[in-house]
Amino acid sequence: MPLNNDDIKQLIAILQKGLTEDISDSDTNQPTKTLKSNKKKNTENIKRNSYNSVQNRENKFLTLGLDKLHKEDVSVDKLLIVNPPTPRTRQMSLISVKCRVCGKEEKISSTMLYDSADRYKCNKCCSSPG
Image 1 (cartoon, rainbow, N blue to C red):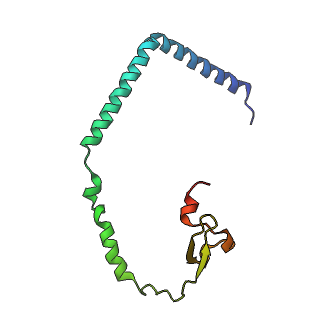
Image 2 (image 1 turned 135 degrees about the horizontal axis):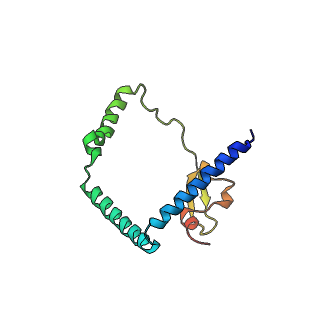
Image 3 (image 1 turned 180 degrees about the vertical axis):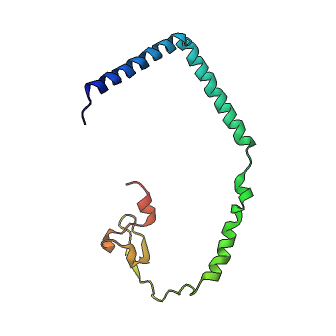
């Protein structure tokens, strides 16, 4: 919806009124150098006050009783458990591999190999540079 000429005139009048108020307010303010020094002092006071307030503040975590919830969780878990964890029935298949860098021979799970046994590196050689 486009603005009418009357709306545009009202908008210009409002903006001009705001500009004249800002100019009159800035004439009464202090010079900028004192404003900067006051800002610096205020930020130092805020830092000091916040540091002191942190030290004097009470620890609400201890008063809420939340510090003992983890102990209650274990007892609730024992009451809610229906079936105990099932034991492992599959045997892990170990294969013998040789490190391609140092030549050390190890037995590892077959799931640890990505491509083939020829490309295996032991943990010590993997963590060393080169």
